[in-house]
Image 1: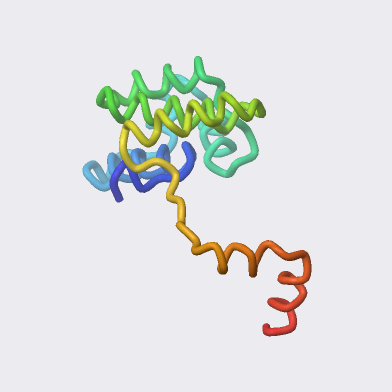
Image 2: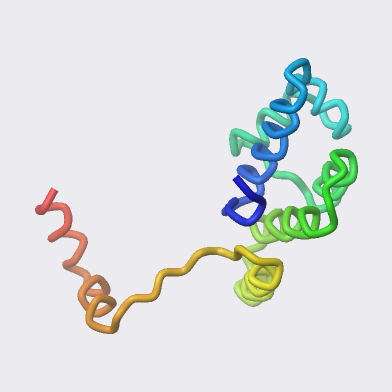
Length: 130
């Protein structure tokens, strides 16, 4: 899995950690957490979605793991995106991800497809179909 296929920073981080563990089978999550200068429990909770990384902690993790510049930029952008509620900032961050390559995938819909699924009763019809 490449860096561009990860939709959020947790899967991106898990992918990076798993790659390192495949290269060195003796490496553990505990050792990687210590290398990142965070507790193993914190790493586990971040990967499970129970806690979030701050941008500063994400930068520390990226530096500790030796991410290449593009990977670090993507990782930090994903962390910022997850942590913001500001719609304008999210749009800016989405554009940055697109520039980095592999931004959030969007599916183009024809107008008639959009109209069909945009009606309030569409969900009910889908439920009846299942």
